[in-house]
Image 1 (cartoon, rainbow, N blue to C red):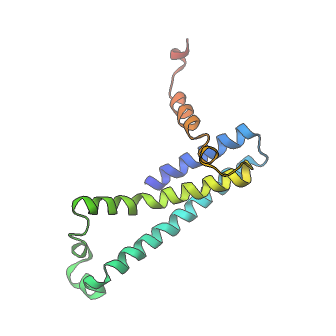
Image 2 (tube, rainbow, N blue to C red):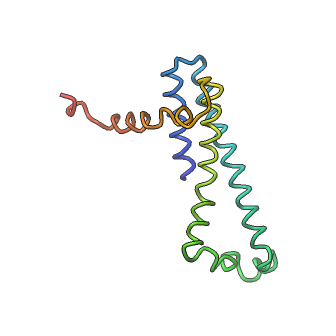
Image 3 (cartoon, one colour):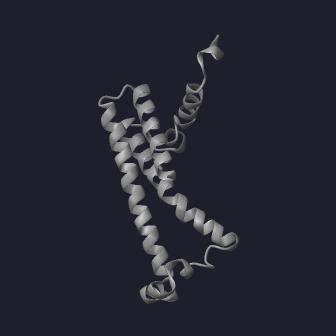
Length: 142
């Protein structure tokens, strides 16, 4: 769910950046950015699951899951402040990594700008402002 929201924002961000820079093949960049975001996100989700399973393999393995249920295996792992941070990391890292990869590709290949923090995230604020402004009615503009 979070990944889908991020992907929509990435597609809007790529589209607005391409329109502002008057880039050819705008749809190609939007679709390519969304596919790249999804691929990186899927890769990180898979690696997160594999990492979690490898960390917890000493707790019983497949036999334990089949007999006692997989939900009991992680019963105490995400409790406390450290558990909350671990859970947030594994939940948000795939989306953040996908966003960063798309940002680098957008900056280097679509916009052909230098790679720095200002250029990497340029247009994000304008995207959210335009989304906010899209909810205004015409009565507010009079």
